[in-house]
Image (cartoon, rainbow, N blue to C red; front, side, top):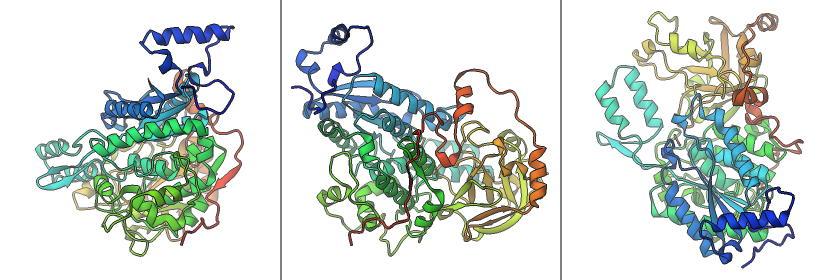
Length: 586
Ligand code: FES
């Protein structure tokens, strides 16, 4: 069987030959080498589907990768293709120093270049943990080969003293109780044995689950595949089907640019809001879109967001876990409910539109996880975009996971100059801090930390935690885990390390947050702010070599997805979301 590609350009193993100055010799040599692995001429004549395996002993979120690879291989072969597995780097949130985000662009480059360098007609991207899916979608978008995303799926939940627990919203909740002296060492260790009950990604609507749902909303995954837990038969069947879909994409030449259109990104932005998704989803969508010459307009996102309710009752905004979402119908149920706000004519990896996929899916049923639009978890604007003299380039707050009374707040700033300063002083007994102060952490942005760590959820100072304080307004140029909750202003742009106004804030200044008016203001005279910034300490000791040098020279700010400037499309052609209503089906 020959490759079904309609193009006259080389396909299968003849694609992208190594340069020896004699293409016939290059093809002969390549075939000879791979025959060393025992392949027949029949097998080698088939269309090739690369399977990107990110299994790693350092990545328990991908602990089922081997079974998924086997199932994808089965799906590819049943559809007449030749599966060939290959690795890239793999990133786990807790095993990446200094932070996983620092390595996302490296993984995206690895993904792009290895897809391009090796002969494959389509590729299945197996990812899962937070940064892996965006890295793979960024790389695939730039590589331009038909690609379908497969996620490893969420972990199961565990139990502590009869109470259901799962990573990582509960990790933070229990740790906060431990810091406050309410849970002793033995109990916190016992909880640590239950929070991650199996391999797979975090069991709440954190960044991994968010990116899995957005993968479906973008049309880059098999519909209904985001939520199947990592260790279930459903997950394995999804993998088999994904392999077959990849083979079918070859004949259609269904490259990522045909799927990742402005309509697809608009769908994803609405889904991000409706699922109560991670704020990190916004950064990753901006990065993926930027690869295709599409910009995410934060102000337009805020405006459409006011009409998109949070429908999904999952932690951290709600109460349930991903395995419950799966049993409730997963993304099929969510997309059906959200359908009138979506572009149902957007193309998906199957070659059918989102609307056609929903029509072909099994019927919905009564359940309590996906709310109706008339009975939402949160009425609208789950993620709000803030502007003001403190964040002229924008900042965001996940108000659906914040304390309502703090959404309109003015308080005295308590400033930490960087992460080290925070670690040194936050628990000092004589720290001058009160419950209605505003905690400010500088220099944890893309350049500052570097890599924009998820340190934006500044811990409540221990002396206040022991008094029962559970939330305070917190502001930084960093990110926050999607599993976290609180009144936390994030992604302040431009960041302090490159001279953003955040760097001018001093302890004792007053800061006003008004989510209703979408503003974040430093109540200091403009001349005084300019004077402070003019006298600011310049960072010295710039790195002279390696990835760190490349990173610091090239990383963009949060509003551009923190991608490297040289990896974004040369020209931005469109902005999303456009302020027009999506095609309505009712
Ligand atoms: Fe991997 Fe949460 S640590 S998904």
